[in-house]
Image (cartoon, rainbow, N blue to C red; front, side):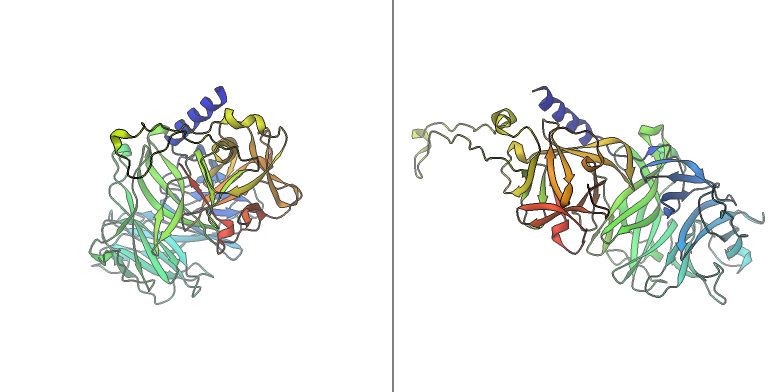
Length: 486
């Protein structure tokens, strides 16, 4: 009984708490996250940035010279390109700005190869180009077009237009003769991305730099051409203030801004941004990493996975993951009501109590138990409690233990790409599970390690009723699962 109560209490607590990056994830205006030699990096305003060995716990240590505001970063071939601005560079006007690029062979400041190239200016604003221009070269964002190989930088803020300029992906310099194109107003910190034939312009709308009073939120428009025009879901031009909401505030965090996209695998995408104020971390500006879901070819930033007790359902057939134990029948109602019987003459209806763990656990084997899939009947052998485990995680999440509700019996990867339920959770790698929301809203469930298996595998439906481990395939429902609270 104590175990059951504790499991319910844990589920209630975690259902009310949004997961957040751990360590010291304090940053403002983060660049798109970049992976280098097994570590993750993001850079922020005023220089420097964060490093993570696993994508979940972050600490200071990233190095970026030049200071300035709102950088972006990208790996191109075997080098890393950094773009940032130094506003008010020549002191002529508070709207003067210069955007620079520089390269490095590595982002690891302890590597002997770590050395930035000299900064190179690629975009100017105000009198540096045209005396009548209405823009501000700040908040640069990079896009390497996957269809053409051309490299674009978006830049701008509320003080004028958002612009797109082309730079050379080999040199990092402005393409000779390129003329910037105005694409949006009424936002800042623009970012570009490409998906399914569409180019997307994401901007940060609202007010910043006011802590818990900041109203920052991320909006989006799309176009068939990288240089626009960009329209929102209602057909409003972003040059006239249009923009579809992507994310604003929630879970005691406010001021979502400075979008970045990280593609983990086909069908697994993460959005990085900052919260202007995390109320659970002293109101500081912190890094956030959330899943991206695509709905009707529009990006949606979803909440992180919420721990709790679930029916884990296969997308293949809709069957539920369960212990392979004997089905214990419940007692049927002793009274019946014939059709057409008058209510006043019928016996009172009695609620049927659900089957409890105590009703069935005595008949379960004490050792390892196989796992299968079957029709969901809200029975104890089908209810799984998912709880985060302290320690290392992965990009955007902690590892989880998955146990039968009210017990410590844990789902585990087994030899020969099998899955079983072991009697006790020990924290072994094969009992730690990564849970990624996919771009269609389903989930990928992966063990941290599988005994005797060197490749990366995930939980799959080998057949309607047979789960196992195999290579992830976003195009197959065998690789996809749903978490249903019943």
